[in-house]
Image (tube, rainbow, N blue to C red; front, side, top):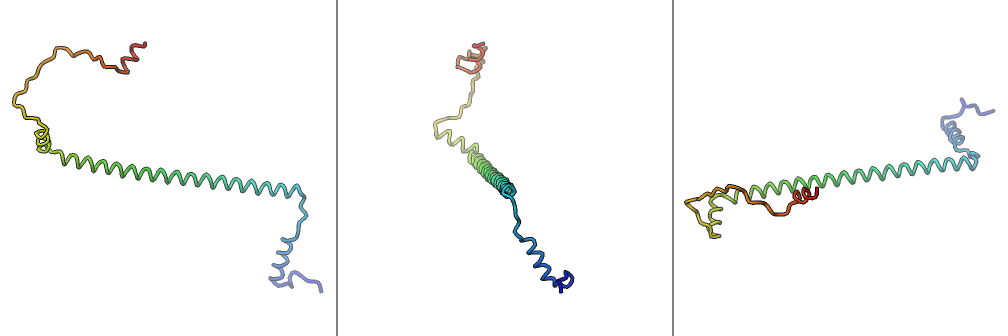
Length: 132
């Protein structure tokens, strides 16, 4: 009695289907080379994608760390500025000036200068204007 597909069990049908898919195919050398090239190209593309994405993640993390460091430094600068402003009251400045030998003057004399003296210090603006 021939084996009818309706009389076979599900396990036998699955085994037959699996064996049919695993049968040795007679592929030509050209076809094998094409498939190998296609697989190699896929691996190269995947590797390039992974390298690029890892570099992006690494760069993003470095930028994040630098921003955090910048925020910490700005906070430290603000704290130092606050300490300086608290430590340099008028009374403290007067005491420091007296310790350095400065004295308070009662009379100030302002002398009016009719014209400003000529600036003879070298300057980049003077150098460039004289070359033209």
